[in-house]
Image (tube, rainbow, N blue to C red; front, side, top):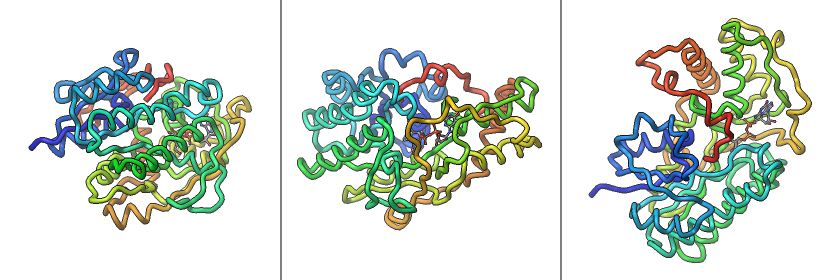
Length: 343
Ligand code: G4F
């Protein structure tokens, strides 16, 4: 029998990779989109005739019930959120509505329509925030440093609570930063790879960044969606950290990106104090031993390979390349990033 999945946030980076994976696994894939996000479908344009879109909004309970009734999924992946950390200081209430209460609305809709649905919540390493130990694992205490991190912690605990209260197969995947050529331009990896490509083509001379000493555990989004899927195939629901296990500074990221183009980042990167966050997360480094042992998951793309892939994709996009062997490079213009899209 064909399995059916519903993905919220399908127009985002992770949603598009997950949709590809589920289609490859033979799923009937539904994607939930908000009315306002229907204009930003670049990442799923190549899948449009293989997936079904249903309208729904994490702010609107009735629309979630309707989306579930229409799609009748066996699995629901909640990848939608207000996911850009700096925006969460400017729009803390809206961030809470989407990223925290949206989880309650969706789980309540599941309870109402079909409590047998398996539910994946996209939790975040931002919940660890001001870390108390390194590397961080499933038992590491949370100390979120932004309204976004606080909202994600709520979503995480609510997922655990619905599992414990109602016996729903609900799991939380605590993903560390994951990137790709489909990453929005506001996130630091893509900002750097796009900036380096621009500079190498003579389209710009400088790149303004904030904290160059922040350290992150960066992996490839295509690897991380596989872990999400594997979590819902287990006999028992359990939460997992998804991480590469390597941390690098933003400065190192710049060195790899600019170095790949034969440039020295010191000639181009400029620190802009206005980009420093009110409260920074200095270091995130994940321990994904549980996922590796119980899910048999491991990342395939390493840090330098990932950054070089992103630089090459940005370069190809700017050159107007339509290389068939670089599917990510040609398809993406920039509007969703500039618009600060949800999801
Ligand atoms: O790329 P970032 O904006 O990602 P951040 O804040 O770590 O959050 C991302 O990862 C989380 C998982 O841990 C997700 F939950 C979340 O949704 C998102 O995907 O910033 C990374 C680091 C920060 O320390 C930031 O201060 O890079 C530093 N940084 C330095 N200059 C910058 C910049 N970040 C951005 N976005 N832009 C800069 O110019």
